[in-house]
Amino acid sequence: MSAKHRETLQAIFEDPVKANILWADIEALFLSLGAERDEGSGSRIRFYLNGIRATFHRPHPRKETDRGAVKSVRKFLSEAGVRP
Image 1: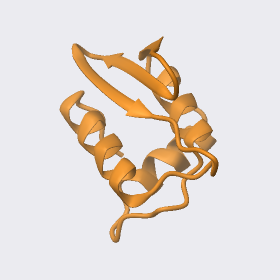
Image 2: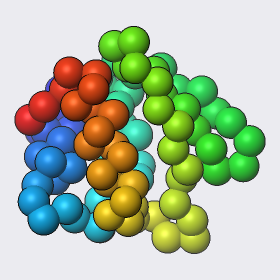
Image 3: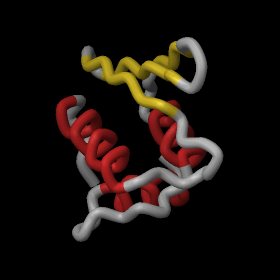
């Protein structure tokens, strides 16, 4: 995991929850952890990591995630056994 990925992971687990994490950075983190990506219809995207599956919607038109999405990402990573 690169320093950039560690920085993104740290930002995901910060309190209070951040709302300005770039979605591209989150996707890159997932892939660096070995997650499989499955493109759905529209902005839907599924990730599989350590036996856990999660579906997200890419944010648009903005590139940053909102707090709710960051909470979902945090839950997905925790269930997959990934912590900072």
